[in-house]
Image (cartoon, rainbow, N blue to C red):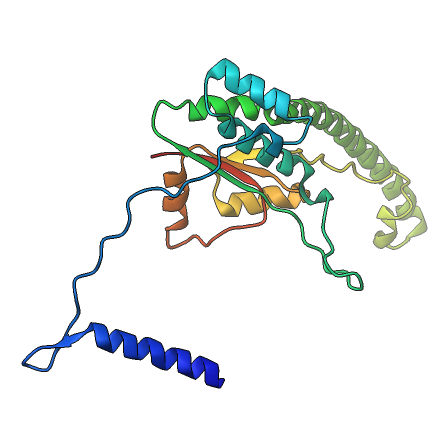
Length: 250
């Protein structure tokens, strides 16, 4: 410990001792604690200039139509945009290493009941909801093609095995060659559903979603209290690594 640090520690200890008084029985009697300030620090009002040029008019239009604070819409829109970009973009802060940091956005807006928080968030998240609906339709078509291809593959395999069994019986060849010389091709691969968002999921389920969606996913929670209660459970740990948007009442 340096001399300056030791001096600072001694100063703090001396200050605390000077604030305390000793009673007749030798116990330290600390003064009454001062009340914490209950006001809010002044904050600069939200400005559309904070938003990208492509988003600012759209966010302003939603806020004007809903008659809600524009920061509600802007926070949700930027966070959902971060989820769509996901791990496709990274930052390498060091010029001579491959250390890469993936941007991860956390968005939360707070307001009293009746401030149109949910409608504002729903409007801002409509584009990502549409992307997810289109991805679900594409996955449904891919699943049908997969089922058809898998059925055809099984038929080819059964026919080829039956023919090869007859040939191998005559030639007394080893059974291990059966799967090699059939020429039936490879089994089709089941398509993986593309997801852009999830709502009120456990972190175990979220981990499974991230396996099939390594670019990232949006975690959407309608209430901050529900998230905090979820994190406070004994079987949960603080999760990070994906964008999320939350609204809360005050």
